[in-house]
Image 1 (cartoon, rainbow, N blue to C red):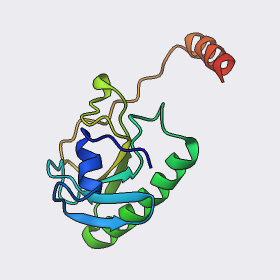
Image 2 (image 1 turned 180 degrees about the horizontal axis):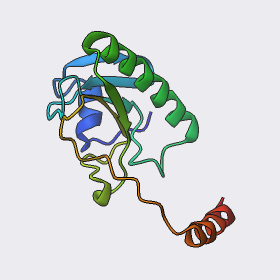
Image 3 (image 1 turned 45 degrees about the vertical axis):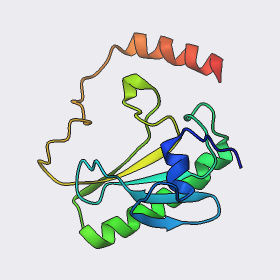
Image 4 (image 1 turned 180 degrees about the vertical axis):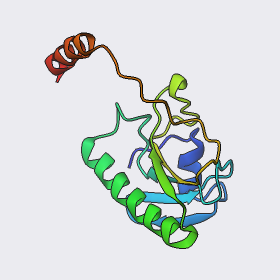
Length: 139
C-alpha cells in the first residue's frame, strides 16, 4: 500500500503518532480531529496515501465514503446533533491542511457559527448553462 513517510496521516495510521482512534479496517482509519470545529468532529482517511480527490482511485473514494457514513452514524447516535456535514477539501483555497485524502465528519448544531454554509443567490441561467456545456465536454 502506498504511504508517504512525511505525511502526518500516514504516521497516524501506522501508529507512529498517537490518535483517538474510532474505527479501522483493512483500508480505512477514522480518528477524532484534535482541532475540532464542534465536539465529535472526526476524520476518515484511506490507508493508502493519495494527495487529494484528483489522485485517489474512485474505488478508494467509495471505500472511504462508506467508512465515513459508518462513523457519521455513530456520531449521530452518540451526540444527536441537529445536522451533519461530510466535508472533503482539495487544495489550499479549500483549506486542505493535510495533503492526504480525508473526509471530515462534523456534527452541526443550529447557530453553531460555522461559516461553511452560504446564502442561496440565484445565478445567471445563461452563464450556468454555458458553463455546464463546457464541463460536460470535459467528462
